[in-house]
Image (cartoon, rainbow, N blue to C red):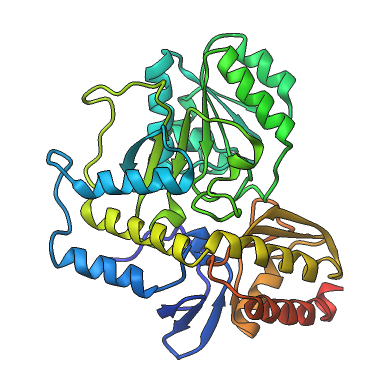
Amino acid sequence: MSLFNVYPLYNVTPVSAKDVYVYDEKGIRYLDLYGGHAVISIGHSHPKYVSAIREQINKLGFYSNAIQNPLQTALAEKLAVQSNCDDYQLFMCSSGAEANENALKLASFHNGKHKILAFKNSFHGRTSAAVAATDNPKVVAPLNAQQKVDFVDLGDLASVETILKQNETCAVIIECIQGVGGLDQSTSEFYQGLDKLCKQYDTAFIADEVQSGFGRTGDFFAFQKHGIAPDIISIAKGMGNGFPVGGILIHPSIKATFGLLGTTFGGNHLACAATLSVLRVLEEEHCMQNALDISDYFQDKAKDLPHLKTIKGRGLMLGLEFDFPISELRKTLIYEHHIFTGGAKNPNVIRVLPPLTVKREHIDLFFVALEQVLQEDKFN
């Protein structure tokens, strides 16, 4: 049997990893400044993470949500304190797409409406309603396109209000920093206005924190910089440091009933153990402060790069937008300098999403390599 060929693959085969480094089968060491799409939050193979999973699998790896699971309760309590979202409720699932599916479904149950409002260049997942709310026709099948979604320019409150006035929109879903789209963000005035409009027109405000959550921006959630209170917050990626975990945080104004949502694997014992260890390390090793410190250092190093148009994002969710497409640049970084970075829907943006344990010396290695590459004739 062959693999279904849907991924264009780089010719690198990782076999082990430690903190910010990945090692291939030839023993070559790669600096990981992408973290597998912002998944690696506390570094590869962190000893506390490995220990937590090993200890839990030796006791109980999985049982269904039909029984009591004290680990879910412990996780909800710890997450409430660290995220400062103590009045929210937690529902766990297994991925970011699943989190957004449940968020949109719950919003529709809550207010009885059926349309979605999303933003241009958004990415919310590859399943059903989540992919319909993703601004990329190439990944939206005809089946998904039956969902009714309005796309609005980021920052355009007037268009948002025009649509919400029609009283058909169950949810507005937004990334406060767009990930795949290319690290675009708007102003606090816009996000606060959006929050106000959602409340005015009985529309659920969903903050998609799948990529930006769990400390990546220096705040626990990206939306917290703007002083808003979403109705639902979707989470995944860095939540499990590589273990497949997702979830939604739900405002107490939305009430639960038996059978409203459900999942087989979500919130299993291993998932909870993994996430609890991530929260513990984020706190004990001051990873969010490190994200802020390294972000400042990175941006200072980047500002004089040739061909650079702008520095995008914040914390350790960063983008460098050049005046040329960066696909060949990324290949050169991987194959000649052994550094992983990410691309975006914007072909000129290189994304940098390292583990939150990254240090200044790792950023120095990146900029030495990047400056060398940018001096080559093919980029001039």
